[in-house]
Image (spheres, rainbow, N blue to C red):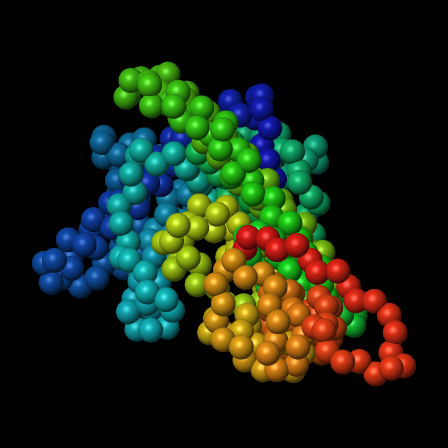
Length: 401
């Protein structure tokens, strides 16, 4: 799937009609959900999608109160019913244990600031020779392409986000030509807060802390929003300014994740990470920093890019004692508080950097062929052979995780 930005100007004026399209899709979705919930409460058979399509779309267009449904492409309304089917299927699969549990389908609100409509091939949308997007009953829309499409797209979804920006997302098929040539390095990755990622080869990647750096601007926009009268146009404009400020932070974080994950996947044959309990950490005093790091999104990018480019992705259990075991001799030294960034192994005397040691242990737990030599910061003062000479590396400064 690839997405492109719809720029300002005439294209935006045309896409203002999407608000009406989204309203039609939302109404059909809510009508179908109401019909099925009513049937369930009355003990009646579950209405099928074909019957709902006939009642809520075809016949509803002939009624005065739903005549405006005929102003939009019927494909959008059909996709709304399919979305409801998918929501019910996921809900029932969660009850059966086939997937993680999720809530039952809920009614869509007209106050949602994010809007989306989807066009399949049946809608007869197309990309013009001038690289514009031609949508049924909307017209030609100018698009700022983020990348060339690798194949003919089958579906396009036009999204208006909370910041008032429009995006066109295409579903395309990628061929086997994306498989990267094999390489030798294999790494383990320890994710943290002081450093966003520490690799088993000793590399430390600083945390950008996008949210922390933008807090002053976000607070100013939020205070301006709180002073506006509810329901006024000024409040709506202030809400968009707040949404754009948050979107800027989210975009910067996503760009950082994409660049780093692509670099790691291209340079390494296998990547191992630890399955972190992000939900649990998000309930502690570190919640804002945890959300700012975005570990889950980064790991998800690593996983799907590894599958796309023919790399190996391994996720080890969250209960592996990666910070308690010496990567030199394998001795377990017990848990340590977070402020301890460098520790000495009581068994072999190695002085270890906590983060690099954890990254090496993650790689070992995943069965990767890595060396633990760079996890050692320095040797403890032990008697050395008379013939040995040389200096030891300087200890790394401790940082908050």
